[in-house]
Length: 209
Image (cartoon, rainbow, N blue to C red; front, side):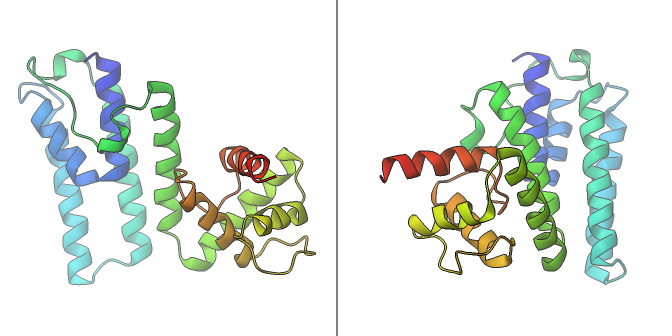
C-alpha cells in the first residue's frame, strides 16, 4: 500500500473512531519516528477529555470543541507523515468494512461527508435543525428546485405526509428527507437535501412513474 492510500485510510478511520485511529497510528508508526511521541500526546489528550467528562468538569460544548480540535490536529498530523515514519511491515489500516472496496475518489468525498455529519450530530437539536434547513435551502436554490416540488416528490413516494402547499422548510420536511436517505442507504443520513439525494430522488420518481 502506498503512502497516499495509508493516509486516506487513517483519515477515514478517524471519522469513525478517534480512539481506534490513535491506536492504529501507534501500531503502524515506528517508535523510532520523531513523530511517535506526538501520537502519545494525542492519546493523552483524548483520555483527559474522557476523564473530565466522567468527573463532570467539562461542558458538552467544551467537550465537543476539544474533540473537534483534536480531530483536526490528528488529520493535520497524518498529512505530514512520510513513508519513513511507517513500519516497513505495516499492512492495511483497519477501517470500517463497508469502506474497504470504495474507489479512492469516492472514499475522499465520503470521508468529508462523514466528518461533516459527525459535527452536525454534536449540535443541540435546535442548532442542528437550523443548519439542516439552511443547507437544504441553499441546495434547493442551486438545484433550482422549489420547496413545494420537494414536498410533492417525497409525498408521492410515501415519505412526506404534511401540508404540500408550503414553501417554508420545516422539521417535518427534514424528517422526510432523513427517512428517504435512510431507506436508500445514502451516506450520510444528514437530513440535508443535497446533490446526491436529489439524483436518487429523481431516479426513484422515474422508476415509479
